[in-house]
Image (cartoon, rainbow, N blue to C red; front, side, top):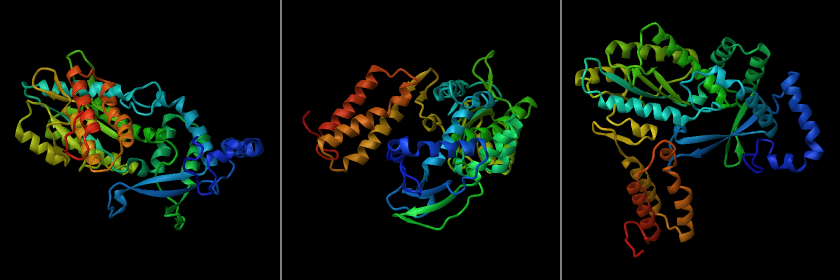
Length: 394
């Protein structure tokens, strides 16, 4: 743990336990093992402070804040022990469509599969059947998990009753208080949410994956094939984001909407249709596009790749444009050019922020030499300029 990172409500950071382990280590060990093995009560220790970090300069409601949870070190040790044990078995429980947080799986694998499918949809200009790709965004995904749904899913997966009760105990005995400028508010107890680990969210999202697999098996939904002999891909999961693939018909869209509503009612999850997007293959009629978009309640997009951090696919041939990458870098520079940074500040900004932006795309694609040269020119121009939109001699 970070020595001085996020101390809990008791004020003791990890540094205290690390430095004085020879004094308090045995007591900490007995307490944590008692919680894990002997069903010891730790409700008093499971207290969390919530600090609100503003996302925008002038926040007006809670949606404009990012909540940061400050747990006690003792609870972190218990939670990490459970997460480490769960990590060894999570891969055998979670569908292969989910690539985030699962050991020995790379999220870039799903990115490449999604890129190939979207490229196929770009190229498909003939045929009576059109296809669609729907990017779903779950609203506050980690805060809406229903504990009853999670408990039933874990039991259905085959976890023992003692293990399920231990996990439920960790997430249900927590108490919160909002810390504003060092002043704690009243203590309250949540009725849903997942403060333990992203692994628990993966178990809940397995409910959606099971619904989709069942619908495909019964013929209510059909996936997309990149080639005739290739596998049929119906969905890909990126943690709290989901990509659905299928035939672009009103009947399939209506069934998908009903399936998502069923998942929402059972799990407590809520699809944010305002942030969700739909993309159609090139042979889909305009009337069908409008009708399906209206049924699903999502907006139509001609470029869904940017929502995945993918480069654009241009034209019928497999030509790739990285304009999104340049736009993202220029946007950051435009924002920071208004700040009076020293040369040292510029150096840190370029090395830590700007040069890290292409990393995600570089894990999947080979960047052209011309693009690398163009990015270096952008960095050099920002390095030498003495103000916003002011050119200088290199």
